[in-house]
Image 1 (cartoon, rainbow, N blue to C red):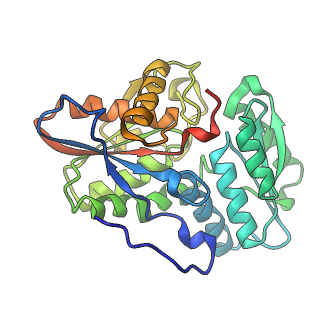
Image 2: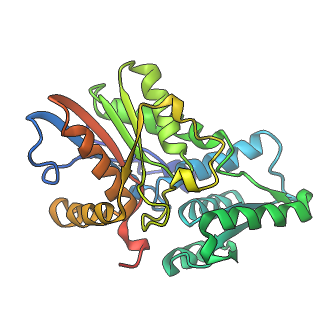
Length: 301
């Protein structure tokens, strides 16, 4: 399906979504002839990641519900990409944004959020995203009237963004042929929202989440649920399974995607493709869709 270019927009926010879906040609060598694996290139969003979808929706939802007003400032905990999305959306909508980020977040993402005008407060790098959540909790508790906290981990507007956009795009772009869907677990918004749409509109579609195999892992942006603060929006009973992927496998696959497909995949996208291929190898026929959340440019090698 060829994407029609949007050449005129009233705001950068109108450019979020409608990302390309690309068939993986080489990393899936050896699959049965009737099996295809496709990847949704979410780094094509204006803020550079899949989190643009949720970030924009979280702020618009706050405005619609009267929770985000001109006398309040946006605040949230993030490992990076949601922060970039919130900073971009806040700039476009005219709201100040404060982000709580682990102290070891990559220099690239620190620079990007600051370029959008966001204030950054760093949490203990050893506590990861969970530490950022706890620090954000404490800051908001001190003066709740000052802040609008969209809370990407609890707010149903996060998966709703994907139920309204990502899922419908996948169904349309595959002409309804999609049989399996796989996405990594971070907040879980992508996998929950897109899966809800796909399962409702095409019963029989199988949906899976990919998560790190280890509690201490190098797949930045993904959560090992057994050892993390579990997002309230995560409902594993609604999908068909969770596939564990090692850090080495995710990194190796990201390298292959870049070198063999010419697609600038990051490690979390590599992990999602590992999981997608695990499913695909067991099929006689089918079309497996996965998500590449962002590009490698934001991560040091």
